[in-house]
Image 1 (cartoon, rainbow, N blue to C red):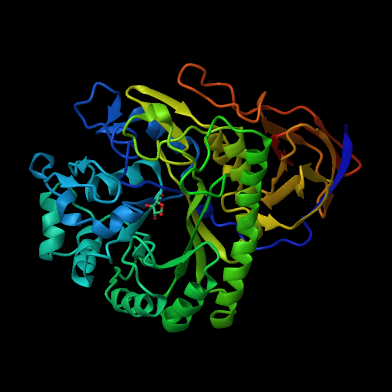
Image 2 (cartoon, rainbow, N blue to C red):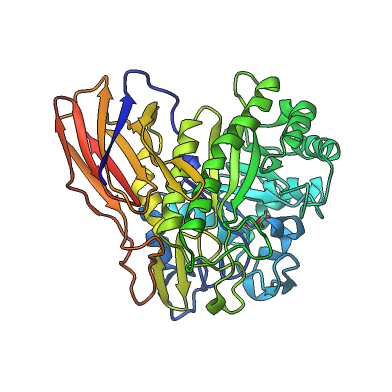
Length: 494
Ligand code: AHR
């Protein structure tokens, strides 16, 4: 059945700029996320650039990763930065108490900061608050950013880096209500104030301080932390994962699922809108001008670990379902661009909803990678409000809006429109009206696949990837789009 959908893009009512950082990434020292996924070392037979996998670096550069959060996650609150500096053959082996296994610290501060520079991303460090100290934090920051002759700057030089790096964000702890130290919000808010006092940035290179925020809908956490420490906070985080079954002990398979879990995953992703609205409303009480950003610095789908992944903790496959749920989440961030100014999908390589999967020398780009590729045109664009009138997509007793849209005008004047059809069975004809612009030229790309469960594998890497989209036409200022079932289309309108 082919029904009609009306979408209006209000180019005449431009909204705030969409911060590039909402397409950010998270890379934790965990499983194969860093080791073998990003870092193989200079002597590896896997082609590398100074120890970083060449294939992974090129793929990440292609999607213009704006910011990377590291080294955790839960790992961060047990991390001693001194373990990861200096000659690599002298670094200590440590237990990875958060995620199992051991960490030989071959990937440390220099490797991370150089990696961020190499792929052109901003650096976001998670500071150890749970088992660390303000002194450790301030010394780490000085080691990275000092340009003078202090002992820490000289130590960095002795370790091979002359000029300071640019450090853009520090997170003061991670999940302080849980793995970061099981703190109550009042206590954490005071601890935050203490640490925030000792974040000393160079005068020409400010560092944004991100407070450890709430889990999902715990608005009480946000309320207390904002009320006690708001004036010292530049951003406060929010973490939310979608578990398809809703049961942490059996989260659901990343590849073997039916329509019920397709639907629950989309419902989980759409919940982000309500969560942002709730936390933002609490923040408005203390910060009506929205100086403080909401940083959704962990989000994504968390499924059961891939049974074939051995000891690669939190490694899961990635399907068309992940792609479309990521697309609608990014649409929500864009719709809240006034408050959400950073987000970091969990995680970059081989962990949770990853962009990239690797196995020894092999690499495959996931469906979610291609969403970030298609959405990179929105980085730094001016958001344009959209109205969508579309039939619901129903499964059993559950229904969600079937078609989702987001739009932005980039700095060259091109308007980009993303359209997502969540219905796995039904194509839609979309009538797209552009209020305030007279587009005459258009090109587009589509991401879809034969099945809801379609994935890319090392042997079949091209099952879910973007293709040129030729089913849209402009006439009298209206774009008519034949939007396939279970698809994402991004149009560029000149
Ligand atoms: O992303 C995996 C883990 O999820 C992070 O380490 C932690 O912050 C969250 O609970």
